[in-house]
Every structure is written in structure tokens, then in C-alpha cells.
Amino acid sequence: MSVKIFIKRSVSESKVPELTILLKRLRSVTLMQPGYISGQTLKRLDKVNECIVISTWRSLEDWNDWIKNEKRMAIQSEIDELLGTETEYALYE
Image 1 (tube, rainbow, N blue to C red):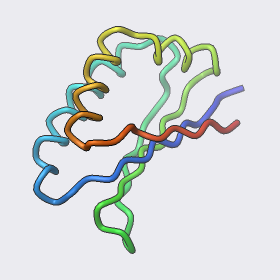
Image 2: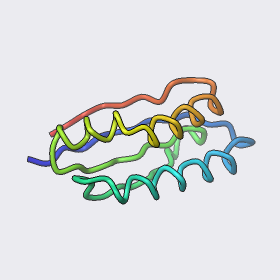
Image 3: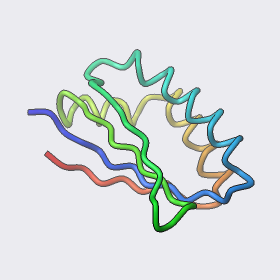
Image 4: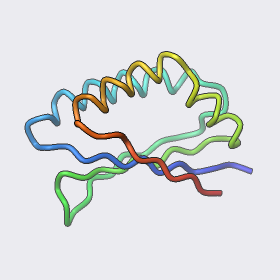
């Protein structure tokens, strides 16, 4: 059964260009990860500094393998440092 991962980030307007570059790098690595199905990025309308990514994976095991991916961890570390907070994840099936 596929799983959906909700990835929430808050970003100030001034950091959007840098975050966009990092997210493009992350997405390019994600596309090569076994079990990845799709992803969608949404901006919250009532809180302009918040966005969410909905990522679909073939299985929880595939997601867990992705979380441990060294390239992902390196880029994610840059994202968290840029935002000054850890990215939030919520897993659903």
C-alpha cells in the first residue's frame, strides 16, 4: 500500500530563492529513489510563509530508505539550517 508523506516548512520571503534552489536539488535526487511515485508542493493561502510537500511512496519501507539516503540528509541539513528550524514530517496511508 502506498504512503503519503506531508512535509511542512516555514520560510520567510527573503529566503524563498535559496530554498527553491535547495528543493530543486532535493527533488532531482528524489526522482532517482526506488519507490518514489510523485510529489506536489503547495503554498498555504492564509499563512504565506508556510508550504507543504505531499510526497507519495510505494511503501513505508521505501520512504524509510529515502530518509536514510546520505544525499537527502545533506540537502535536508542545508534546508533546516537555512530555515532555522527542523522540517516537520507526517506519514499517512
